[in-house]
Length: 255
Length: 255
DNA sequence: TGTGCAATGTAACATACGTTATTGAAAACG
DNA sequence: CGTTTTCAATAACGTATGTTACATTGCACA
Image (spheres, each protein chain N blue to C red):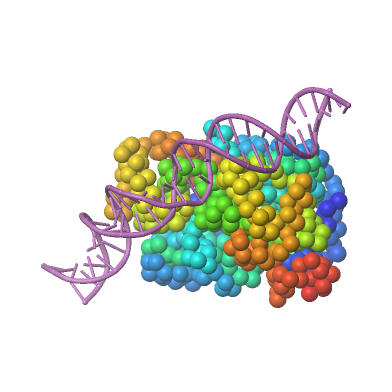
């Protein structure tokens, strides 16, 4: 289904050929699996076999300490690829769990070997994906190390917002937002109670409207300022294309 | 000089051919630069041109907020590669600065293109390096989000210790340790004062001896327990090779 | 071989955030 | 359609860590 999100995202960065499209399309329809919400897709310690492409739904990567302390280390949105080439490692150092119901396509080692040999544009696009994911992880390090609770949450919301927008999953100034306050707590290293307090503060300042499972961001600039958010780490611009162009896919693709 | 550390590290994971050795050797002697301590090698916002291989000395990646808050997001030790393929991005989202005097080799885009086309073993080794760096960044997220000050510092020391040992840079139970308490503070998201308090605590419990620029770890197991350290994320084992084999390079290479 | 600056150490005090507990409101479910 | 469970909200209280300030040590360099 939402192979569209992957292609849209990658094409923001590299122009893919018709053949590239066919390859990606085939890979994402061959071995599809479905999961319910709040379920593990992969567990720490397992041998990684395939690379997972999120077709729909939200998931997360998380780690746990012996005593149960849990940290969400990243979120996966539709169009995200879990870890290009993970299968060269012997075992997973983290788990992947769903937030909502999720559909994934399993991408085999053979698929990546073929891509590496025959589809250089896709290789570049996958490297871009890999480098951006690394940059996101660094930015989370920055957030957890230096940002206050309010800045941290504002920053995370900006990041999710921009990533959803790039994947074509925002409607106007709002989007689906299935994360619970507990999820936000696990991702930001805060307690649930403090996440609650902080969300109220963001609401009180009119920076967000968050109700049910919908988030609205009436003024992205203000939210970005509140979170000391600098979008450079998402590397959404390429070859002179500007961040503002996001949201107008036809223009962007033409660039 | 310390191309040895890179090769030793990579060979822990993939057996490289004699030709691979020649290629790496040439790349790491062609364009070498030297820097003093506490100096920037690359600055946020610049266009990435080359990939940097650390030949000797310690460096770090760091980010800064507008108001000056600074976070070290990773350390580079001899044999580390800064970011395979960064040059596909338009601009750096972080800076790289030296801790000690540092020598680096600049690896060009052409070098990576050539490797990609002709040296599959090196490609695999570079992917391993990339995946391990990602795993380290996730583990830092875990540390900053969930570990207490003492756990955080103990964990970081274990990580550095194992990475140095893999690079062949430990002597018995001690190693060079040029990080100041300020560096540790920037890396762990703690204040300098609290880093000082916490180091005293680690010393008092006999977990570390840290004096001048030398660190000794009399009992790695105990330090690992104090930091809730699980070495799996460093992916130092491969094809049945065990972590214990680290430190006996000839055996390891024979595996 | 001082002399200056950076790094370390210590103390007193401040605070952002955590913990525990309870309640109400939605969802999920049988 | 009630029942159960999860999620959100709020309050009272506790604490790990931050801040400011200053003293001490150690090392680079003149």
